[in-house]
Length: 186
Image 1 (cartoon, one colour):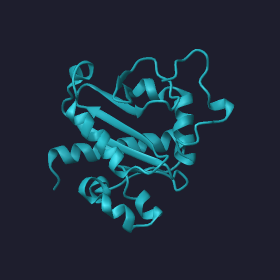
Image 2: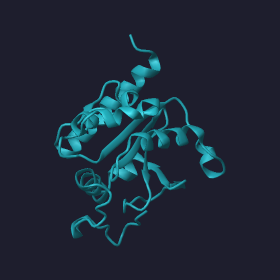
Image 3: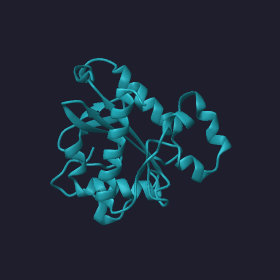
């Protein structure tokens, strides 16, 4: 039987997979034991498996087959040192960002989806991708914003799919994906 914290993390991954499946009308699945296989000290395995195998082990959520540039980590924790975002290094956030970098391939869309017990849900994304949010904190080249602020924007939904299909190197989305004048791109 998994520990309480592991069960909480698994439940969050299942919630995220369900949300994405409902949002995009495509199948997203939780990947059991995902990050441990190619993350951290096991990054050498990336060179030993093919692209399809890697996609099945990278991140916490397995996307539809065409979403080749998808790298999503889900984190569920009891607490988070929000106050440190303004004036100090946030070691836990630095570790999560490094986990993304350890398994990413060129052009991957990297998102960290966070749930803090009895507080809120959050999205952390890299700068300069054109996502639009009303409020965010900038931290070492990444933006930290609320779940609802990020996912309520049609532009963000479209860009997540665009970058997951085409890679973040394809920074010229079609005109309908560009932010409207009413929102601020970060």
